[in-house]
Image 1 (cartoon, rainbow, N blue to C red):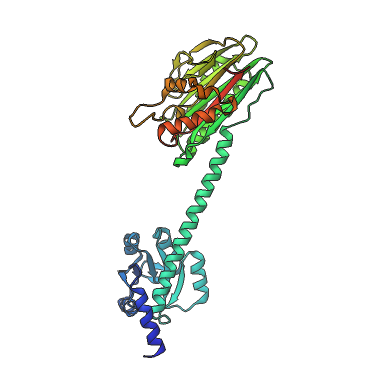
Image 2 (image 1 turned 90 degrees about the vertical axis):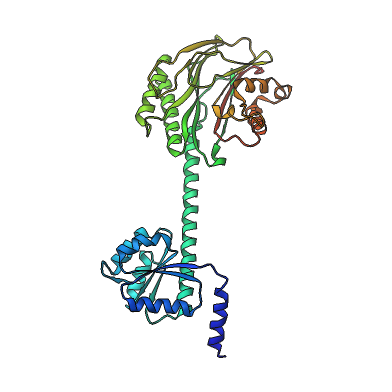
Length: 400
């Protein structure tokens, strides 16, 4: 046996363990199509060959192919223009040009346009052809994997920028209260939501706080959350009357949202530090919780409808903050929607208050209390909460 025969036999043996290659040959010459089939058979490679005699026919078949062998002289497509048209519909299939034109410049141009390889009829044998096709398929897969990885990286970078926009630094000078912020994205489950919060001080003794949640998950919702937070801060700093702020925020929501069904829930409070009292407004949002005198109690506030459904004034509830040691916890519903066991029961507001009343919760420093709450909610849920969680903890004195 000659060295070449031995090499061919060894190559053919190795091909038997490879996956079947699905090839689409776009060739209008029946003789050339026959020769290609013979070359593939000669290499003893596992393959499935489909022949299209025109670009129009190829468009209907390319979805089922891993690799396309394209002749540049077709009845309905000629040269590089035909390659461009096929590449536009090729999807994940690798495209190799197979032509009788021995033109190096044309080959370079074909590869530059997106072809994986350029082969000349009569200059390739079966082994070379099969190897070229398999390499082309693997290069295409590598290119696709690299592209998807880059898209993921870009989305992560975009998500990180949006999250920074959702989570500003509190704009305050007072030392009468301390503010702890917490945010955890649901992106561990592939999610990015529109939870947001903000804190703004006006004058010497008035603190404005807000926690909000745009319905849904995705970049659009996160971007809308950023817009609402920025708009809220601008309205507060501009001195818009308190009773008009949420109505104005709703106008921003309705003009900027991508679809009419998008809405947002909001909890806002204006805290008068001098008189130790707050005005709370809830637009479809769970109530804040007050920690005072060793107990956690939900604020019994009137709740208005969510923003973006039917413009309606959000009712105000006056809250007396007794004593010099209290905390006001504001949060998004991602914190309380987790399960509390194997059944369907959820944590909800009452369960949150019970957690805060546990002796172990009282031992946690205020700065670490939001993170502790999420950790407990995760454990009770049997795994990480799937939604975003945002929290504000405003504390005076000992905080409880």
